[in-house]
Image (cartoon, rainbow, N blue to C red):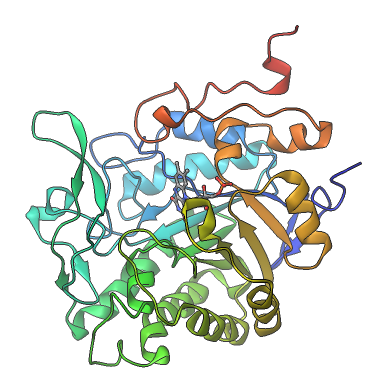
Length: 371
Ligand SMILES: Cc1cc2nc3c(=O)[nH]c(=O)nc-3n(C[C@H](O)[C@H](O)[C@H](O)COP(=O)(O)O)c2cc1C
């Protein structure tokens, strides 16, 4: 079989996966309103994809303050926890495994979606230029709007950010998630703290690499305290170029982070490669250095075909590969890879917001019209 390695089992942390094809986190803006609560429709979507080695949920905000887009689900209310419990249950009923991606968007937000119209928070009061967020207008229509001016978090507020992640992690554990993925990628709060362009702080959370990584490490250690380190992963994106994020020390700091992950015993490092969205490709030297700095599982993601994924794993650069848009459009991606069958094409017009169309109605191979 051409994809034997990709389809072979692997253990990540202490979770056994039947294959190395993971579903990447995908924001779909379809949580039910009011309250950003996961719904039965969301449960069906994830259950349809249960043959993945591991599903990583869409980014899920740890608080209202951590929300940047309309109708993304949260994990800070009882109703949200119950909705997620039904989703984890639906995936488990189909013998799948599911990790919850926890995020705080930081400055990539707008006061229109913050509690009481408060400004979004960030490491420093620096607005993200050329950045838009998805909001619901007063007339009920949806649209994109420029990210707002954020305010800098006070030093004494930072433990509260860690607590937001801890509370959400307790909820995720109670809801039955197999793992938690801390979202430190793609220009959101933790990434904003790590990057030189967005973090101009002069306290213990800014300046040196150690200081800029402090919040991410505090969050990770605290989440590991809830779930156990062998059930926690982290997503990073050193070559991400969106949301006006500049980082002059991305390689150094991500390699330093990797050695900290080894110390903590974090189960996996999920590398969201930024070149699918216009970033420079990661060098082979960097990939090797990352492998050397960290001894847990490495998951790659970004524009992979099954063939390329299989090769990367065979070469020892990764333990598993996550697929985003291919998973969005192919609920039976694993079966299609096994059968070397063609893939459905994702419909970009239905990526964000809407209902079943472009969400739960992509056909499996068995459901395809026979020619
Ligand atoms: C519709 C859509 C939503 C996404 N949402 C998230 C998200 O919630 N969290 C995240 O870390 N990455 C998110 N991403 C990035 C994907 O996880 C992935 O890194 C990217 O799609 C590249 O992989 P692919 O080429 O296999 O699609 C999103 C991408 C898309 C297309």
